[in-house]
Image 1 (cartoon, rainbow, N blue to C red):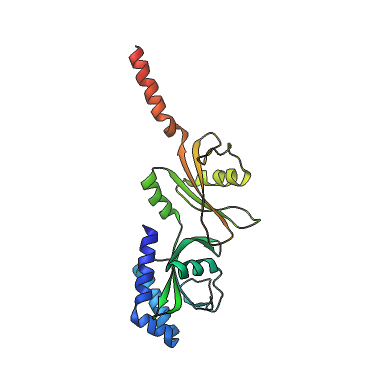
Image 2 (image 1 turned 30 degrees about the vertical axis):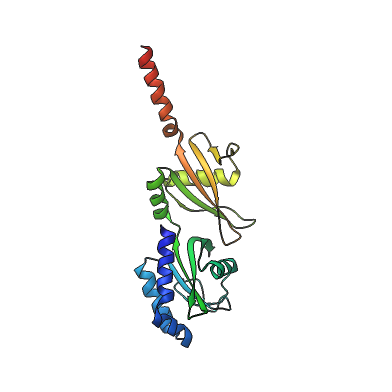
Length: 226
């Protein structure tokens, strides 16, 4: 749902006549204003315009400078082939859900990228759908894991990070299920990312909750036997 909202918002901006005119004339003021205003309308955390030379023309991301190279060429290639690309990216250490679409006039003249931060609010939305605790972690090549977002209470976050970093888990079965410590049934999912960072989602259910159907059956059998 979030990806669809991002894609729709990016297409609306890319199709805006005044925005395309500003790109054609190089009017950075109008371009930046359009990025800021449109980002606010769809609650995006980052919006940017990328030129055909793969350099950022303008953006609303504080740590990304205009003229800096857009370091995710795979996203541009995918958007060029399919008119849209969507994936997870790690920008300046933070995890984002990013969508890239072309700006056509009528040929491609630039690329619009729109993104949401993968944060605790998103994790809680997913928990509402799955009834599982959800955590997102990322790890740059040859570096340590970072917990990007989670539904876990603060006291449980460092132990999760330590378990993942130390490999403190049971062997993963063919469905991706494992055990972290002795407290939660866990599933690890490796997520597609446009960066070299490894990004995983950790889905957890407390062991007591997972075993409740068996305990309930056990109680029913005990009553039957009585």
